[in-house]
Structures are given as structure tokens and as C-alpha cells.
Length: 280
Image 1: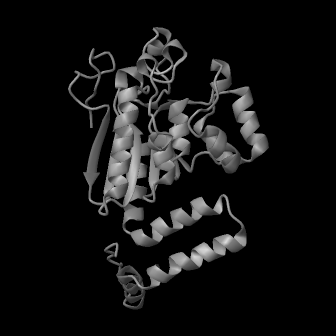
Image 2: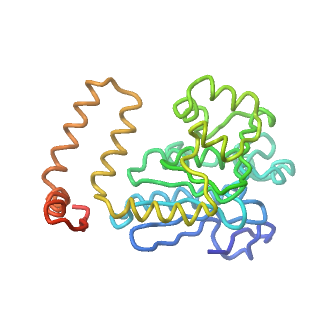
Image 3: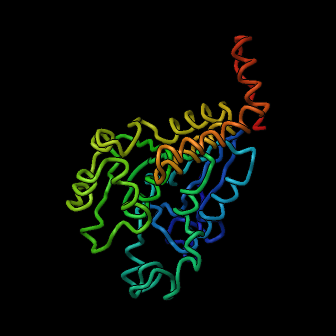
């Protein structure tokens, strides 16, 4: 998938294609950040298009897994430093939006917030360099797969900024307080292997997108209602007591056990055949 968006073509586009490309194959939707000549650095338009694409995928009952990747040789370089230094785009003139405006008037419409609240499982296929916002975006996905040799740059402290899109929330939960402080305060680049040791990424492979697509198809072959319920319970469990969580589990179990997918899961087990789930 290639193509771009950008009125001057400097981001690797001809000004006619979107900055987020959408492709669906079977039950898997792939979203591709599409400013390759700018290493897929974020723009106001990219964020708006990414929000729309994520919301659309989460509403589509036929989509059972979403993969996010980058066009070209990188995942996402984060803030477009050239635009910010020029006083335009996100960060220009000390603002968070282009021309001094906000990226989104409603924080619930920010891509990273939408991503966190999605019930559809998500995989980040980190196919190359990832920094800043790109790293926060990847951390917001349920699973992260990275290509060998990728440069992972948690260098917020070296740019005079904080991880503004979820990093300060995700990192302590993923790796613990002390490791999160080490990663964030030192701001050193991480190798994929070190990121895997720390628990930031799930796997280091030769081709992140190929492996992510393989995992996504395997996820999509499982019972979608059960997986969505698991994800909701994971999310609730981050901020509730064990007893409250147990109550939520029971509330999820009742409709699941009445579903056709549960019947199919039991029947396929007894009949020694692969299940054919319908999501109902």
C-alpha cells in the first residue's frame, strides 16, 4: 500500500491521497500512516483521519482485528519537527494544533483515546523507526511486533516535552515504575531486543507487518465476542478491585454463554473440527 497526502507533496504524496490508508482483507483491517518522506510524522490531518479510521473499524462488526503500520521504511517519527520549527503544524508557535488551534476540541476524539477505548483488538506492526507520538500510539495497541534493526526513540526528555499521548500512563503499567523512569528520564534509544526484554514489544521479527497480519488472522479466527469481552475486562481491571472485577466478569459471561459462538465453540470441540464463529 502506497500513496500519501500533503498539499505540497513534501511528505511523499501527490496531494490527492489520504494520510491514513485503509485496507481490509477478510476480518482484518490494516491502517497505514502515510507520509513516508516525513517518516510518517504526525499532522493535524493525519490525526483526524486516524480517529475516523479507528472509529469506523471498531463499529464494523465484520472487522475482528486492526493492524496499524507505517508507509515506507518507518512506523512514525512523532512530531513533524520541520513544521514545528517553521511555526506551522502541531507544535508550531507553542500550540498543539495547526495555526494555533487545538488538534481536537474534544479529547475523546484523539486517536490515542479512541484506540484505548476500542473493543476490537489492535496490533502495532512497527516496521521501522518509531519515536514520540508514534511510540505512544504503538503502546496504545494491544500487541506490538517490531522489525529487527528498528530504532525505538523514547527521547521526550531530550526534546523538552512529556509523552503526551499515553506514554506516561502505559509505561508504568507495562514495565513497572522504576523501568518506566529509566526509559523516560534517560531518554536513550532502545533496540528491539531490549524493548522485548523490558516487555514493551511482544516479538522481534524480520517483517513486522507480515507477522502482525498472521497474528491478526489467527485472532480473527477466534470468537470475536469473547475477545472483545476480554479486552473490555482487561481495561476495567486496570482500575477496579478484584471483587468489582469479578462482578464484571459474570456480567460478560451471561450473554456470551447464550451466544451462538459459544454453542459453536462447544460443538467444534466435540466434533474435532475448526470452529466457524459468526460474532453473534
